[in-house]
Amino acid sequence: MFIDSATIFVQSGRGGDGCVSFRREKYVPKGGPDGGDGGNGGDVILLADPAVATLLDFAGRHHWRASNGQPGSGRQRHGRSGEDLPVPLALGTMAYDDDSGQLLVDLNRAGQRVVIAAGGRGGFGNEHFKGPTRQSPRQATAGGPAIEKKLRLELKLIADIGLVGKPNAGKSTLLSRISDATPKIAEYPFTTLAPQLGIADLDPRRRSLGGGRRLVVADIPGLIDNAHAGAGLGIRFLRHIERTRVLVHLVEPDPIDGTDPVDNYRSVRRELAAYSDKLAAKPQLVVLSKVDLCTNEQEILSIVQLLQEALAQQVFSVSAATGQGVGPLLETCWQRCERAVMSE
Image 1: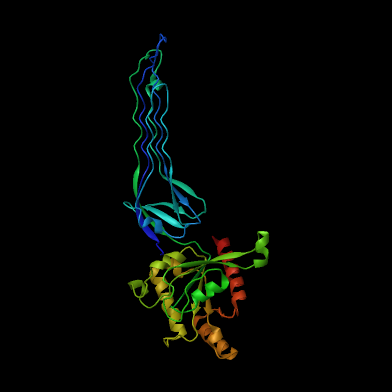
Image 2: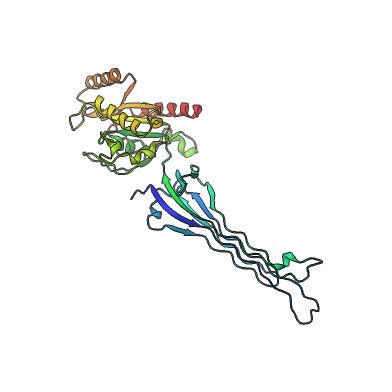
């Protein structure tokens, strides 16, 4: 199950209280204050864990509490500090304060650790307050309070390339061709019900040497007319291509529903613009997919020419089934991503 949003309650540990104690031992003529400090409360730490793919763990666990610090005791013994509580989250998770809506942290780097709720400091025992004029202090401080926060978590996948298009445009088949991802593929719309990630290896022979070029590719469910109003699967999954550098827009040459390829392209573009002007303005490549279903090369060229004239931009042609045109497409994707990185 793909879960990309959740609301949780986090609470750090309270600091342990300091101790008021005096040394009283047989055969020790002079005692004195020896109350130890309390231990610090545990922190709640948000951790970007590449092994976590969704926010599924938070569907059944809404409360995350670190342990409290222990109070100090006599003979200057300090209380044990509470254990920190790591909260492993999928890479790309954004944590908001649920009350104010403020973005607190964006976990966009693997291994990133952020203390979202710091534990209370341990209180001082009376041993801290002794002095020449205060030889018997009966003063200690309480431990610091716990910090409580209600967090709204939103996952936005991090990828270089985002695949968009109508349902059944061939996005999942292309993803399975260029990566080890295994999305569901069938001859009916909406086989993709949740975003999928794959890694396209442009230099597989160099992978064993620790080098090579790789592209992270995200496939989202297809868009239909009025998706922004909730039609089909809606546009809630578009958040997962907001971070991509380049969009690859797949257009089917002969849609099974009899629609026009140019109209289908423009329909998807309208839905992107309705969701976000920034998303619609991303660099994109237009790709005629499933060309293996065309009767001959001349038919492919005529459809490509039709699209190029109507859209006033270059159109690539690929067949994920046979691999035709996939290599040049990936090379162009890499070049476009390099340009996007340089302009950031």
